[in-house]
Length: 397
Image (cartoon, rainbow, N blue to C red):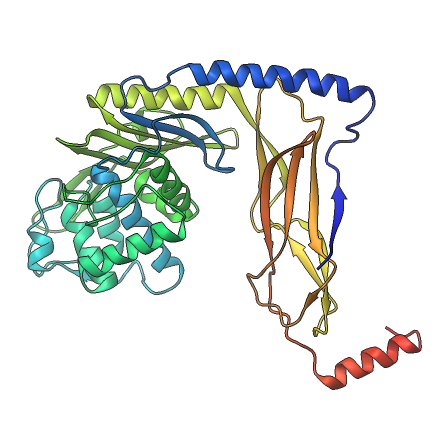
């Protein structure tokens, strides 16, 4: 099928005298990038990565694909599967979750669930996100999949769907186990995916709360991630510690339209862990800016539908399409191209990929977004097609 490039230029011009200035800026950017790569933003970490959450751009990495024990950062995947179930309507925040003998037997960090005790999904999420409850994680896993082992299968399945190569889960809470590992890179990808579900910030961004508040045994929750209180803009995500994994953290913070994800594994202590993650955030927010191509909901074009009930399918931005730019580099030379087939045969299913939006800086491709159909477009019946053909013959639409 032939493809047609419909060019939507963000910059007014990328030719002529501007080309020389752009080439000079591009050379400076490359030089700056080399200098940044030489700076170790996390010297105390065994492995680390700094990523822009909106675009997935990696700003800094250190041994980011090393397979290491993730400790309680494991629970990011547990929370992801939980909020997916909530968003899909398979689970409600008010649903009761019963604690099994097995769930109540978990050691380490816990909210001290008793066998047979029931809490709502909302309360369990608080216990997982804020107190890193191993018992709450297992209870939630059993609620969703029937058993922890079945839930772990779902975790590994999701890891495969996300294209993760450095990850394999053996449990849902991160307690030491054979064949249980991940990497800073993969954890950042899972964290990015979790952040697409905005409701999670209510839990990961809270510094303190209560469980069993109106009972005889109220339980005060204090977030294990102290950055949510002491770093401006921080609102998640998950800490971790075991003797084998050392001190770990997957953190996120948002400022000025930017959202950062920073992951450190194998830090020597909490002070170093928090200090280095804060420094990684400072680096991204001080050195980078976001340039918006299209806002969510913007009309960006249409594609011709062959033999459909509609002849054209309008295309809108599913999310904010943006690119990350180094501060000091102008937006001149940024352009985007809408890549669409000449036509698509009906039927078309909602969510079906119908094209892509490619963003360039000069001649360099810097970002690509898949474009998907907003709605179904069924195949037209023979009578509608006959009327359409007849109408075109007589100049009637």
